[in-house]
Length: 399
Ligand code: SF4
Image 1 (cartoon, rainbow, N blue to C red):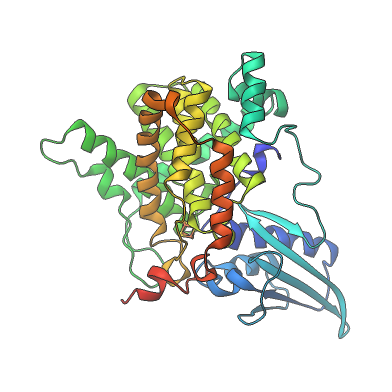
Image 2: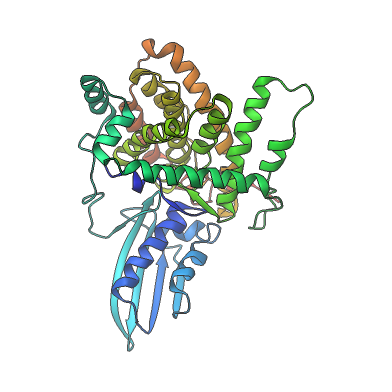
């Protein structure tokens, strides 16, 4: 498995696979052909179908800036290896100088055609939860200590910067008001949720209101193209910070405990990324929001110092009850259902932890098994439900 640096990426929203990935690919390509007469970028599959709403063309133009670059949305050519495929072409003196194909495989990660997934960045020798938990048990260490062993001490500094950016995005999101760009009139709601106390509000209502306010804040910032942390993707970036922020505020967990929780969550996200997918275009929203929920549940379980079985159960449940969740963003924007979905998943993550606390002894489904199931389910989903905006709510929505 790769370093958690590749899972938690700091960058601009609204989509890790549709903006961060293409930007990374464009920079790689331009470094090899920096001064050609003209360029062309051809977007296929989900990138072509939802690239306008996800602002792929805008993000690419930021990289090419004043260079002569045409961006083509190819809605016809089928994709073979991955639904997020893009070609870069550079022309010099009327001749093709360089052509390269890239795949934006989720969470901002890109692969050049022919490059093996994660071939040169593995820092974790173990690749399943079963193996990792056996190792941790034999050494009597927690998951965050396994992360530290594999990544080295320097990882805490990186995680501190991740936590800073997460908190900043919550603060900004709660401050901002107004309508998000994109033309479907989605109002920001984080500020309202944060401030609008019910008269005679119960503790439970307050908990849900605040978790939702934090999740909305980060997700609305993402939709606005601001800086967020992929956790594991842009579209699902609100779940984990919302749960951490709520628990830190409520229970006074220290920053050190929060960073350990982030490390624990990264094991869950990394396993799903390695053994299945975190890409909505590849496996639907279960791969994005389901993974985010599992990461948040594992993080919360770590904060409460639950044992390995309980952490596994909380993460497993979070995936299990998102199985089959489709990706059908209205207008190709990362707004409906994405923003609200982050809030629901954050609440679910805490529910999963509560249940795991009581029932871990009787669980029958392993985390590794549910990850395999999620991947198979995702592959079986019709393509219209995998970030194409051609099915589900995206099809039925009328302004
Ligand atoms: S529906 Fe889910 S997977 Fe699709 S763009 Fe929104 S958050 Fe991402």
